[in-house]
Picture 1 (cartoon, rainbow, N blue to C red):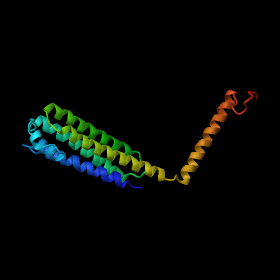
Picture 2 (cartoon, helix red, strand yellow):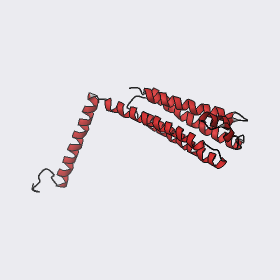
Picture 3 (tube, rainbow, N blue to C red):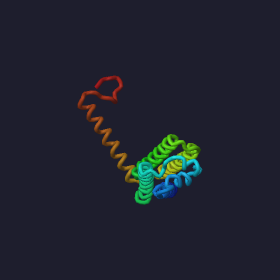
Picture 4 (tube, rainbow, N blue to C red):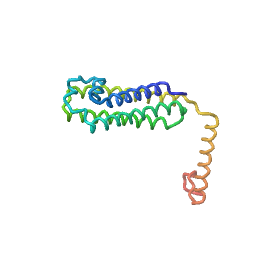
Length: 185
């Protein structure tokens, strides 16, 4: 089963963060434009010194890394099947990176004195959280809907039989019998 919602949300967030990284690269108003797209008023964003290369380059790079992580999650959902655990780890890393980056934006914006940034980032974090919960719900529903194959059931039964035989042999070798509750032989 392919994850339609997971692939759509991963692609959506990859595009969002890639566009924000592209807007940050713009020389004279890059970070201000990116914050304006997020919803911060441009007069509040112009107070800070955002045309500095030391601010623009790390922020654009971090946004691009998060975009690449979400795109990687998108590719993983297209390539792997429902039983793969790789999709979960990549999606988790992408969402943790995105929320960490937005938290750093809030901290940096508070240090620069940008007004209204907290609510804008809080809305973006809520959207990220809702996306992550939707992805987890889709993953759990697909795992619950998947019925094990007959070969998987046989392999599990074979493994349990081997474990029971092994435990029985160990108890016979050690002289302890677990099946007789009276303690005798």
